[in-house]
Length: 419
Ligand SMILES: [Zn+2]
Image (cartoon, rainbow, N blue to C red; front, side, top):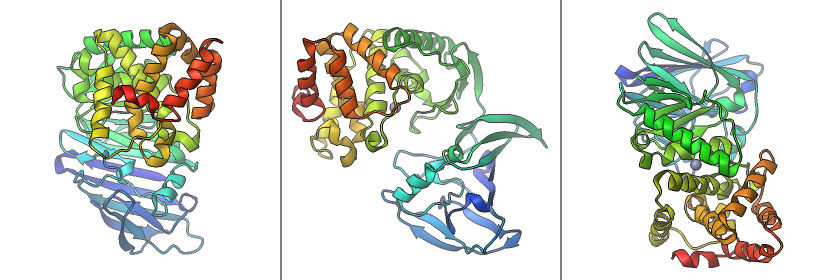
């Protein structure tokens, strides 16, 4: 499969040219962002016309599905498409995309290239997790622009006054392709390469803060040798920071690079690169092992850097969400089935904070270091987490810790303090 995307920032448009081999295609239709128009669709070089349908994909407000009839034994399908992005076509409400002269962001969630999936969210999720063959992705931009993508960069070549960034990866990873494009100001620091949108952003502050944060995490939660070739790319505020650990790329909102107090977001994403254990698939949507742990570690690092407690902030963020009436009080173990995973960022992190208060920081850090090491590549569940922490607490503490989990993980009793 080959995906070529030519970005024309000054025209606010992109041009896609994708070639799929028969083995890349499991269905007779593909999803594509509804902002784009199909310019040409060819099966083995012969033009065909698709049947176009708008579908609802759960919480999105409609996607365009292109249905095509594929002959038996065809070899390849070529899709050419183009258009602008209105920025309102994301699959999840938090996802933003944009093509402008200053900044371009395209993301797989907004179907910026055809995805051959059935049209329900469940089937899409299954399709995205299916491994596949090799693929090549080329992002073509005018000279002067830099591209940072969530895929391994093979090489960059100059072609007719433009720059082509060539990425290769497995089909599995290509399903999650994200890329930003801007006239970045590059700063290579001992802690990573920083692609900044503003040349005034303080490299020294960023570097010093990242060194301190890494040192603190190493000391308290286990040493991680996080490669200095991590790429941090600034994105405008409102786009939402996130890390692509496979590719070693972290997208961070611009405002987080302005002061130590704002750097919690980049620190949060940095923590995801090294101090998470995988959650069992059945419990991923609870977001406890990624987001509760990461937000808790973020809290600890920020308290170390700024000497200010973050507990009141997390508590008020959580109380506001509860007060808004959109959430009922449910135990952490039910966050997944209720779609409440977002609460792990606040009350999930506060649960870990309370556990630390209960058994003491030194003991908590020691147990956590052991837990992260033991399960670094073994998916865990909340039950395993509770058993491990209770077993690692000393004899006297064990019943106390078990009661704590009863109150905080399996019931809502623990929340009382924060209501
Ligand atoms: Zn996170």
